[in-house]
Amino acid sequence: MSREPVLFDHDGGLDDYLALMLLLTMEHIDVLGVVVTPADCYIEPAVGATRKIMDLMGRSSIPVARSTVRGVNPFPRAFRRSSFHVNYFPILNRRDRIETPLAAEAGQEFVARTLAAADEPVTILETGPLTTIAEALRLAPHIQSKIKRIVWMGGALNVPGNVSHWIDGGQDMSMEWNVYWDPWAAYEIWQTDIPITLCPLDITNTVQITPEFVETLGRRPQYPLSELAGYCYALVMHQDYYCWDVLTTGYLGRPDLFETREWEVVIIPSGRSQGRTKIEPGGKRIIALDKVDKKAFFDYLLDQWAR
Image 1: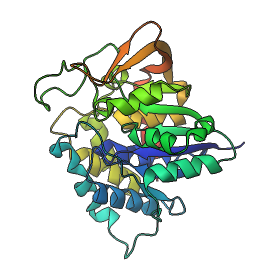
Image 2: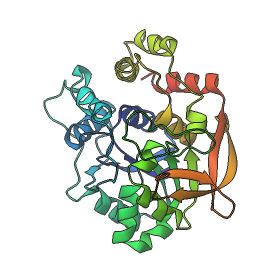
Image 3: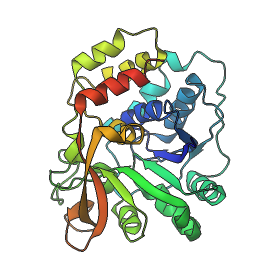
């Protein structure tokens, strides 16, 4: 059976590293490269943490690229600090040097080159803003035909957004962070014919990380990935924390655990609703993850991280 080619772009938040750890366990996926977009992170430690995780997992043949794009609405500094925490975890710093290569070109150029060279259309797994992908399309419009679909953690369709308490007034709080960081990039992608599979807050709000799940990870020190995942989740157990990026990635591994639904959706690029993903007749027809078998999903995570 041939493996599905996937290009992964993440933005260095805590959940992004966990998504990477899940993606790299999938034997039916051929990861062509990993790009780090400087959104929910500080870019240098985020790139370092990404490469060290890939070393730990024995996947140092996959290149990592550092995007140089910029967004419109920065993530709060409190969010972005997790890139430093993960980069300095002892479990990731037991080697003298990092083996996973860092691409010489910027991440957006790496995306354009990798897609142009692909033998078949590629799935893009996106767990951050769409800015790097939009910029790659500006650099090389012909690569659109090489994108099979974008599987994106982004948006809020029938639930409130998640930017409240973190931004100054003037917005109506209907937007989700990965769209809000750069609404114009999302708007550009929405004007293309690229198929979109969306993992919105509607479903991620239903899949919360529990203390019991984290404790289970901690009772498996024989598995480095379980130990690393436990360290990551331990950083956020003082707050409500959900499976945003991990759930999105899980769809690539076990689509049978999910129910999906089609919607017609538009992106609001400016004004008080800047960054809103709004259901509207005549909008881009997308597939949204709608429901998931939560017990089976968490069992799947435990199985994949038992290594």
